[in-house]
Length: 308
Image 1 (cartoon, rainbow, N blue to C red):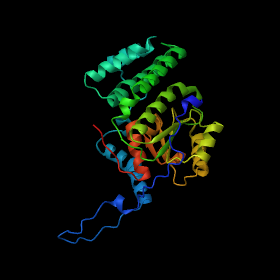
Image 2: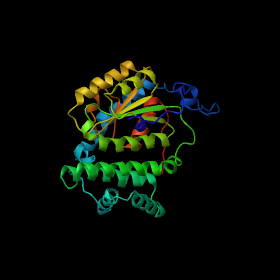
Image 3: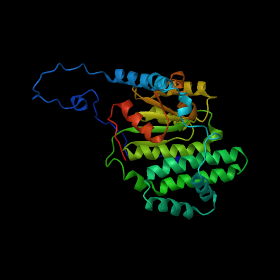
Image 4: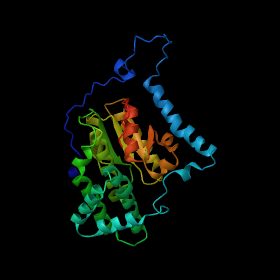
């Protein structure tokens, strides 16, 4: 498993960012013509509570007010998802025995003007879901699906430097630990692609991202006890192991040297029912890698960044 983990380039991140300092609130202009009373600035804890209320309560009510079911506005499960011909064709490419063909396919898409982010989120992610569907329906066996998912991870490594070059030029001094939720061993082949993809988005944003394939392992527990992480993100494929996930999140918070550790949870169940984050004791649900990084920045008090 050691080759699956991403080693850190920093022994101690020790970033000195002060989210309650003057640099965070923004410089005030003393030359204002009208001396308006300065509003009381909300604390970081208050902002976190507000974000959770908006995510878990206000947004679902807004959707219902417009006559829609929030679950219908969210991504469908792999079995319900409509799969485009392009995604099906790309699946055949990664199912083939020639990895160079897959690299050439992505290069051709880039040459046509598509960004790597678009290729990752709109082609590779649906391809991984479609592979799961093919396996569920016995169209391809587990070995073929696993090899195809491994080729998707190879593509992420192939284009990693180009993808990260589009992001932060310097490290932000923050660390993220990414892992499957407890009880996900049967889904590990599929989840490892998701973990690798999420890791790429964190690293593009300047984070130091670690991947631990087994959150029930002694290695994971040792990492939590001995290393500083600002955010831990768990990936969940279903909702059968929520009690185990809640116990794991509680243990991570208790054993981490960072008493302000933040926890994200990513998975279809948490996309459809974000209130489940309260059940397991996490901070926020994450629906995709791009949003997850933005939410992680908010949780630790960094301003979000936008990219085209």
